[in-house]
Length: 213
Image 1 (tube, rainbow, N blue to C red):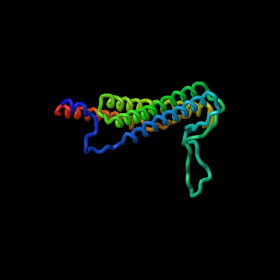
Image 2: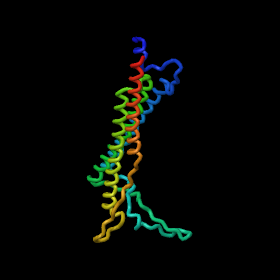
Image 3: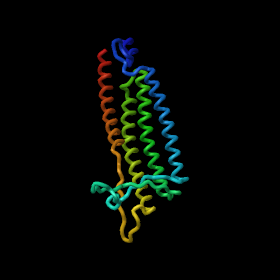
Image 4: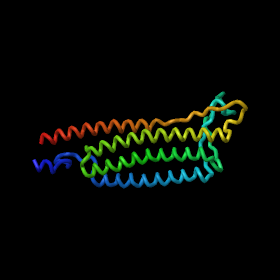
């Protein structure tokens, strides 16, 4: 029985190793490097919001922005404008900064999960309570941070578009700006939470199997 206990979590003879220790180490190094790089870029972008000038893609009221001169009797409109603002007002700058922070938190959650799962694969111990917690927490963090980060971005960009009169100024008329929300972070986050449930089920099966040895 002691021999069986000592061998728990180690690949048995005849098993196929999906990820070798060397490959897992490469994944760990790559995810750590990506975390450092993306964080540095995110910090640089946040600093730029407060120092200016800043170039932003602003939403527009699409029905008012017609494209003239199209051939083949075609019609078209555009819904965004790339504008350079010498100095952002404090309110939108803070919203954009918080949006960038939340989006980066979502990125770091995924990279941290990749790093830790590679570490678990490297040690050949995957179905643990820690693994279940890591996958579930990472998925929830990605879903929440990624979604709310986009909401703050859309709110800030709409305010900037209104401030610079991107659609012109008409007395008594205000324009609505529709923010585009990418559902990818929410979807991936929910999938990760479901995978955490699969990990929990796998852990129970592993414990049952170990109890029979």
